[in-house]
Image (spheres, rainbow, N blue to C red):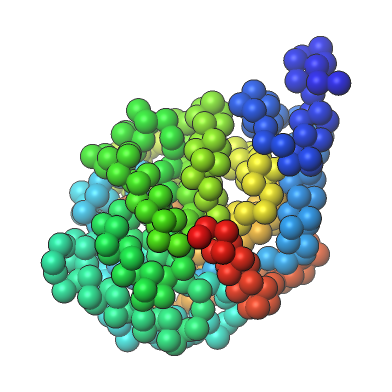
Amino acid sequence: MKEDGHGLNLEFILDKAYQEKFLNKEEIIFLLSQREEEKIKQIYAAARMMRQKYFGQKIFMYGFIYFSTYCRNNCTFCLYRKENHALTRYRKNETEIMETAASLAASGVHLLDLTMGEDPEILKQHSEGYDQLLHMVRGVKKVSSLPLMISPGVVPSGFLGKLKEAGIDWYALYHETHNRALYAQLRLGQDYERRWQAKKQAHELGMLVEEGLLTGVGDTVDDVADSMFAMKKLGAEQVRVMSFVPQEETPMAHWDSPARIHEMLIIAVMRLLFPDRLIPASLDVDGIKGLQERLAAGANVVTSIIPPKSGLAGVSNNTLDIEDGNRTVPTINRVLEEVDLMPATQQEYHNWVCLSRGAVR
Ligand SMILES: C[S@@+](CC[C@H](N)C(=O)[O-])C[C@H]1O[C@@H](n2cnc3c(N)ncnc32)[C@H](O)[C@@H]1O
Ligand SMILES: C[C@H](CCN)[C@@H](N)C(=O)O
Ligand code: SF4
């Protein structure tokens, strides 16, 4: 029975999700609005069951190399926005990047995520920056032999094609929200449509695509539900959500970080709507201590693994857990073991990427 005295029924909705029928907006909002502990537990258990169906106990791990923190953009939520002068920025040279890539690969991660601010030195049209970036990507591919993701911001389609040729498998580009008015307040002066097209172009080129949301930035459950439909339309192979973390000297410095229930329920709902896709548990929000709850909500990738002593930063928590070695594979493995999960093999990740790429083409 669908209806109960209050309108919608949790069992009915979860049952619909088990049958892999895409939920409607009302149902998504109903799940995202639950605050009773028992009901929330039921939603997480359903999400874990769907993860189990497609991935068993296996979890993937992504190494994170934020190689340039220079940016030409001014996102209101981000520490690295152009107008933030209270920050020491870096641009890592090729030797440093290769060393980090090799050490992350040796530590057992399944993928390397090469991330940058929209560094004008690298992205300036007709500059040497493009060639240097392509050279760097080829080098990283060679020293690591791993699948690669790039998060360079919006780049022209011709350049995306070159990145693909150089060895990039994944293009990560997050809209944060699909409420256009809110988007315009967050990603100042960045065209919504152009960002969307970049992801579609990446798919057309045969790359895998990651889409992402930011929660706690003025988004409503209605907005989040709309974003689920946008993710569905895009057919993103990896979907994520991160809780906003306030950054000093930025326009949103005085905003609170949202209660984590929002992020956890969004992860669980994503798992129910996209059971066979990859969903990160980012160490960048609450560090290693936040890993268990994200896995319990249905995530199946641990992201933002950063080696200590590399001089590399995170994004939303740019130093948390890095120097004490808590964003490393051995520490993560201990957490996985505690909750009866285990790292996937390289071959398993490789197979997933190849299969999904087959579906993109
Ligand atoms: C720093 S950007 C790097 C890639 C590229 N510059 C871009 O914006 O596409 C990666 C993502 O980090 C997340 N992020 C940035 N600042 C954050 C904050 N203060 N709290 C939580 N997540 C944040 C956003 O979701 C953003 O899309
Ligand atoms: C937001 C970042 C990813 C960029 N592709 C990274 N700090 C993470 O949490 O995985
Ligand atoms: S989110 Fe990305 S594009 Fe926006 S300011 Fe930060 S680094 Fe730049």
